[in-house]
Image (cartoon, rainbow, N blue to C red; front, side, top):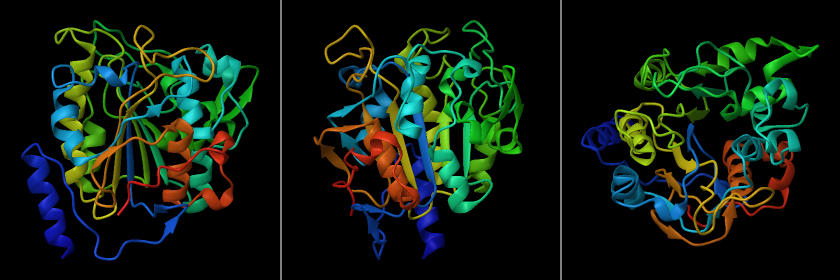
Length: 334
């Protein structure tokens, strides 16, 4: 039966569609959320909910949305980027992160999802996959729009947390083994290189939690040639990577794929503003555990964090920051 299910996923994903199947026995739920298998979260940049259209995002809108639990009232935490990445993985952020400060300036000793997963499952429970990062646990900026390889550490929240990244002394990090082995590039530094991530997917050799961040030429942040359209560039990344995730033997009958954005842009209705208003963004969740359809409940990045804690089994260690008072995304499940 499992072989048949995985074959079905492969066939549908290869044809450009998305997999949807029903588990015979629904797993036990925590806070209304079932227990997840492997989780894949892909983050885009600065893209308002109303911008997700068949013209701007044809793959997201026409292929992912019909097969997803699609949230129509989902909001980012704040403006700018770094604070949103930190909010969705620790339930809080600081003024330093609000200002997109350097990792050396903004690092914190606070509870976070990455360390909770380490405690729950041991080494290797999570991987941050960073496109165009030149080496594991790299703290500085790298690459350019012209090179189609612009990596920015402000989009890499695992490095913010001291119990993940390593020890600091006079502004210099001695990276931990964890950071060097789990905060890693998706491939090389050439354009659109996700070869390491793709190989891991094909082999089914991924972590329980996979945090996937395209470079700034593929996350809708920058207008990079040859495509010349930030929204279509992110959509092309999804079209390339989502089928590989869904046909991976690591996805299985209880895998969860989430596609969302760090924040909305700053020039549209429901836009991102500083401090506690990151604007309305698109959110799609594809899983055999979820019912496809539109859901209008008010949810936020803190709701995402709470839901990840529930589904990955770490909420028993305590909810993180504002996830403690947020609502879980708990009406979408079978």
